[in-house]
Length: 304
Image 1: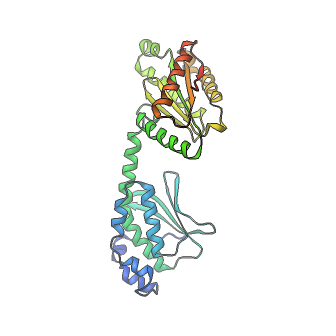
Image 2: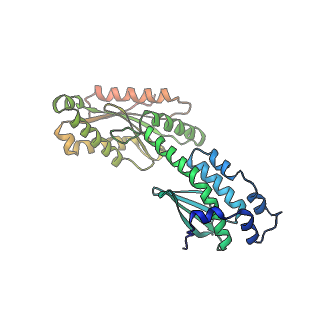
Image 3: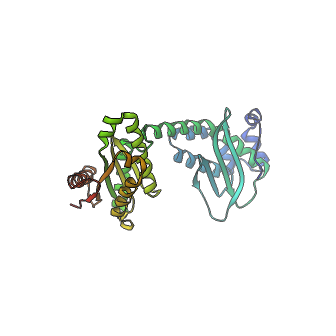
């Protein structure tokens, strides 16, 4: 796959009008009319999140060039704001701004792109670079603000946001989910006897256990201290009791946990139609207290 590789100064010298002539388009075509609009950069600059930015860019490119799909890859994630079956990659560009990699963008079509079309794409990409960089910085900072600094898990803000989304999906599509609240039994004695550094080791190890116990579409959060929360998506096809028991077993088999005699107690509940966030959290919290009051190192489900 050939990559268009023009120096920035040459790209800046390309005029849309001359490119349109090379494409053999007259002034009344949609391509020429789109090229004459100088608001392309302004449209891109409106977006502050990645998905909307890519959707705008895909739409604007398709107004100018007959493409059937567009892919963007960044940090091992692939976004497809525009896609049509039967098309293949006809151009792939690695995007850079001041030697900083901004990802790879691929253009899909059923026909090869002519050189003037490739030049046009290169010009459009130059206008994409700064808005894309701004959005990636925003996304990075947003992810940091939603993460617990010690464990890397989602924090309370991320939980609130995710729970709202899952409730809306559950209500709209009748897809239930489960909420589990966990805390560590005997964790206080670790801090008291061995210090907070060792306590942090235990918290990190417990976070690792939770990640390993769950599926990729489940969510793990740390509320603070030794309190953790799980959101299990589509629990109509998953028994949360099995998940809770798996976590308990994994903790009991972990060398660090065993050394400090740390176990976990878990309370959970399932979403019911009409549940508020406060209601479902309160039920899971009551279930947790029930588990701790009945010997710890176990789980309890509260449905009402």
